[in-house]
Image 1 (tube, rainbow, N blue to C red):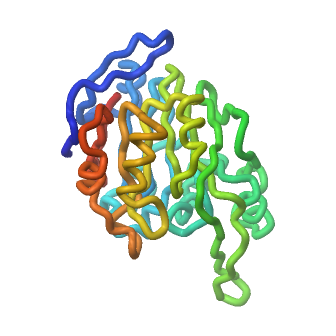
Image 2: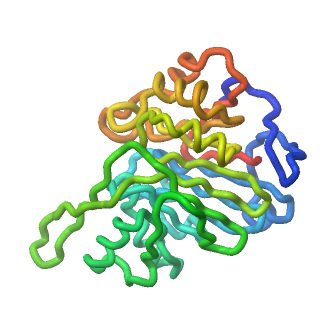
Length: 282
């Protein structure tokens, strides 16, 4: 794994007493809980597995079986281990493909934009109890110790469903796309931006929620490209750490992360160039 502008990355814990160096993670979620650390595993594209200090496992936007860049071992969904919280940002195939199967495997709800989950309820993709409805703004506590806020994302959302009667694909409204501010047990905050273009309220979101790590799309065509993402990071968000995502996987989204580094120039923001299957600790 390469680090752009590497160094000590400080983050907030409770009363802003911050510490820790980003290192490759070797421990599982139980060890992470004992050490009070956060483990982030990039599964490729927009998919992440987060192990929290309290021993919870969060999976975001899993389309593991459909994305060529997914590490082969994670094509088997059981390799994720026990999942406690499942998040989907919008209805496009490259973000939701395996989410219903993970919800069934772990007997947990799938959290997604409310209107998307309403469509999935109507289609019978999952039982209603596994498709809770929520929307942008406010906070929910989907599992003990974890707080979740849905944020704006400048994108689109539809859900393509294979009708079992006709055996043909149907396109259904997928509600509004979202990002997620995820606050962990120790106050550490992650902003998974979902698929998005630049919008002015990125500045307000960053100032209000103060994310420690931002997962930001850079591929272009369907989301921000590297120049857009660099502007958003440098002028609007100003995070401590950024993890580029959503590039080199879907058609057209080919921007390499090195271009983001060039567009950012000299900055205190630490940009982590991760490979699918790599982990970092905070």
